[in-house]
Length: 449
Image (cartoon, rainbow, N blue to C red; front, side):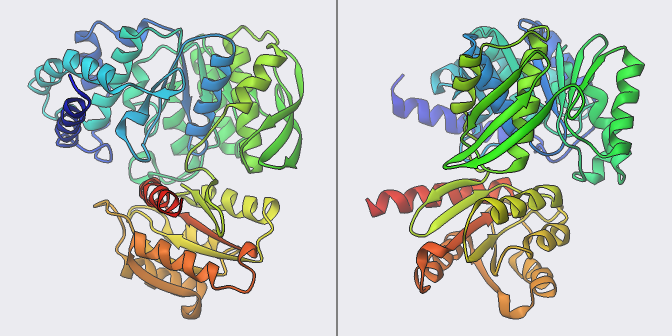
């Protein structure tokens, strides 16, 4: 099959998958995915797994675990969501998106089973459930030594929760997806801690006290073990460095000094400590080879997470889509960059806490251009403008409906400033906004070469 044939086949597969229930439409149950994986021969049990849940930092922590595992010599499979530009990004083998031919091969194996299970239930297999099954099958067919599996939404009834993870990771829990998870942090924590399996090891990032207590209740209930950030493991020191930060981490088995992490933000230092503890736990709490730790962290990338995409002016992408993420972004911009002026480009989903996000961003953005992505879930630009005007004031808000035009205007305004180097542009608000912005900025960079 030629490359053009592969592209055509992938487009057809993507269209078929997207015609299913969207991943934002949830019928909370493991019945469908359990029936599907049973029919497929339980591929998710063919390799050990680390299961990563929580609210913020899941994807980056998963990418860190993947990189560390790869540096120890293991062949890795990583499943994360959502994607930025291509749906193939969700399934990674050895830290690279799955090859198109391999994905097509896996889909051809799974497709008939999807139709078979659809007929057995009132609700069909969703897009996310299908992608989860495709990841499980891919990791079994192109065999991996370890699967790093990120929870999609919640935990207890998330499609990924058919794995039997040796190590479960709980990243910081905050408010998100309240329509499905509950209106209190304790309710949300109860659902998210549902990934914890009997006899497993739990690595828990720093949490609010009530959240920590709820996770510990689940740990006790199922007879798991737990390592807590700030108690059994911790980030001892963090120094801002060119291109990232240098860390000292107290792990479960050793203390690791002078670890360079090419990511910005204190929250990323915490994610690194959690990822390191998870890998140590997988190896029974034994110290890791320092050279492998250095190599693993040095290789970490996290697209769309405080990612610098352009210089002159500096354009940063960050997929903050809830107040907790926006607060972390604001703190990073204040503490690790030296801009005199920041121009925000903001587009969010209608079901998100846009008021809470914008209140955090108002602390650092001098002006904001509100816009919207091409997603059907996007809040209309006029609605975002009304909210932003109340928070920022009318003189600091501009509305441009088309995302590319909004980015062009922000870049033009930055270049028209007296000192272009002192002005930064930050695109944020949702993963989809950032993903589409990433493609736009790549084109701009290529056109300028």
